[in-house]
Length: 190
View (tube, rainbow, N blue to C red):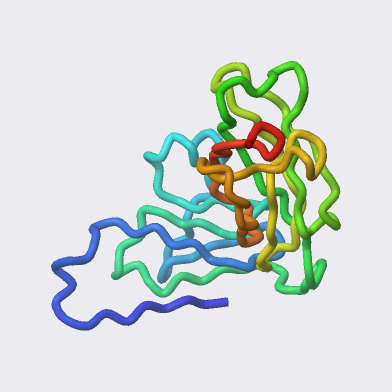
């Protein structure tokens, strides 16, 4: 697969180093080229440090990320097996939620999603942040709906004025973490 960029004007307002994310790359590339040069593959630590130019494969997101590119280095050529492993793959989405003061920390907060038939799945308390956190599995590249509860619909989240909260929604992608706030619980509203 080859990617190319077309630039109009003198390019003076473009960043000096580009980062390019290519989705949907089903398997780790075997080679990434810019023009006649091969880009180095970066390990997780080198990628997270943010300083080295090269490419990294994000298996969870099924994407290739190349950084440190210039417009002169394009087109970008990526060698990988394009066969679809799974036409509608699932993706793990990390969620974290801030809950109202007084919410018991000795029992989990739950998340119910359209992707799991609205079953209540427990989240774990993160002692470092005081937030409930966990992962849900949803279809990649599709919209899903969700709500937070304390274990049942009688304890579902509400808006701060205690009115019924609309379903939350998200798109099935591995990144970034979804951060939400619950303002009130149904059973604690007048």
